[in-house]
Image (cartoon, rainbow, N blue to C red; front, side, top):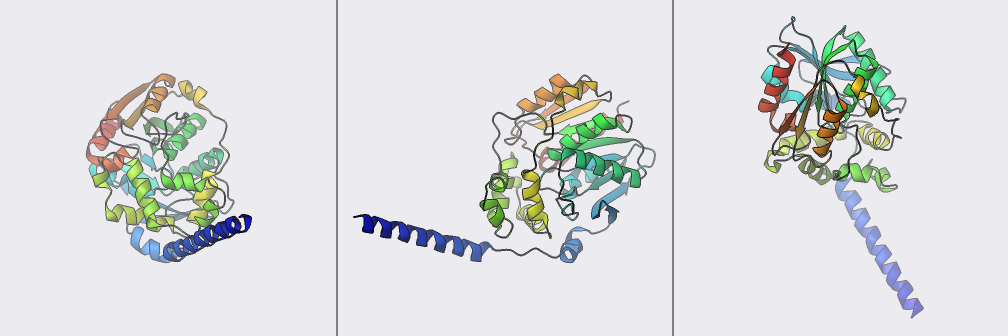
Length: 317
């Protein structure tokens, strides 16, 4: 009886090994050389600037030299392309600067392996100095939102207005993490994730963060998927997802002197809309706009209406 049970366990184990080997063969992806990705995703006006040992991908698009620069920060797993719709809708009237944050897009991994909030604040400050930006409107989505408000706390004289789009910062009670986020936190599995990266995982993750699933196109999935295969990005993604959280500074939000626009999709599963009201309660000079039916990246889902709200806020003196 014991012998049969042991044989049964061996058969199950062998089957699992075969399944894993099959998945590895089917979904194994090598890094895509940066030269190939740059050719596809760094068309003009893309440029690169050296900061902290990284060649940082950015775009500086000047619509009006008279306006304060609008600096845009993307979220986890995204790239500067997440703001394409805003540039198209308000770029003619404003100078817009956007960049791929370390660990993502064409910027890639931080050689020092540091993805703490303090690192991102210092990195952004050095970037703005090299861009000769003395004052700006700073906007960020998700991780980019957290970097934006933490940067504003550190450098309140530089940030004249702040835009938080489904920003992270407060704990989320009912968060539904995308599949890629969950896998990045699983020991052993996350190591395999550096080499075995099914496109399906990226697709499911995007479906999770979009309110309107019909807007998750093949070209959108391809962009997120291919940029995730940039040299070193998969390891960087896992390293950042497993970085020890910095001490919370949300208790300092009420010290921010600048006007703040809070924008949120009410169908956001990753950072539910209840967090928008937490920001509203913590800030003292804020405006909250909630978009019905939109998810975690409302500026991607509905660039026209979200850009219109942002433009009104920027231009309102």
